[in-house]
Image (cartoon, rainbow, N blue to C red; front, side, top):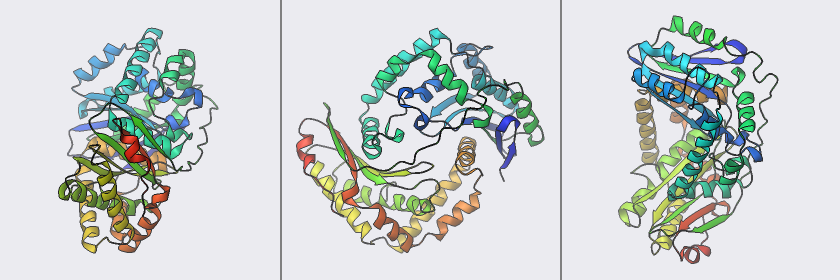
Length: 423
């Protein structure tokens, strides 16, 4: 069973020992993401993540890369809407070195002006890359329509205007106030000496400046309210890219277990309703599926596909027919049991990954303040019945409340303009 320990100045350590593993995944997570930014700070969380790899008081960016390479490991980070993380996957004997490195970059990043200006150019280029990726762009457009001006509706990376206007002093202040022990979850999964781990992490944390971010409160998050709308942008593309959907379930919503199974049945697997009807039986597109995203106080359920302009009306009609059947209670006991088997199979496979375990523990601590036992999750999945799915489908599938985003060649607007879901 994973263990949890309270450390210096409010930091938390969560650890899952797997004695048979010869590697370990170490993550430093801060419960600050893009939704916690003020309007003039859009992109600060993501920019901060970039800067933490650009050097500290003790190490240059090359020193960081060389140390990780020498350990034969891999280091990376990611910024989300509710958390930012930094992790290293290494062989177990290098655990202490990995922890010391992460402590250094997490708390002692130097934010050099030259590196700041270089990363500004890198991030501006990254924004252009996203604009050139129709799948990513249409996903961002959908979130913007669904959540409006709420911070969840804004892209994590920020916008060119805010990145271009950003000043290093403001970014460094954001970093110093956000990256404090009280906001930190250290997550370790794999092969390690549990008797030594707590003292190792606590000793390293005691080297951190005690006055850092003193008195800075975690910004209160405003619960998102979904909007209804649609947007269609013209691009010189061969295909039309389309996303639609509405409010899903938050991490704290007990219906999320039913939603996980509903998502498998609807569109997140090769045997799903949407994939089999639209791709396999009717041959109307190459890519189609459904997905779910959860936040601490809200969530998204969406359906996305790409198709030719001439097939767009037929794909929309096929999606409409399938969702209408699902809302009418067309799910069979066999489909439900198959979805449960798929979920459990994927769940078991995921547990073979140190990195997956590390991330799971950290997110559970941030969201729930505890690590949900594996058995509890499987038990909640097993308890889902057809009545639960039908009740969820009735709430979830309301065509008049679906928002949508579309990206395609000239003429897409005309074919899309008068479309209305009717389920």
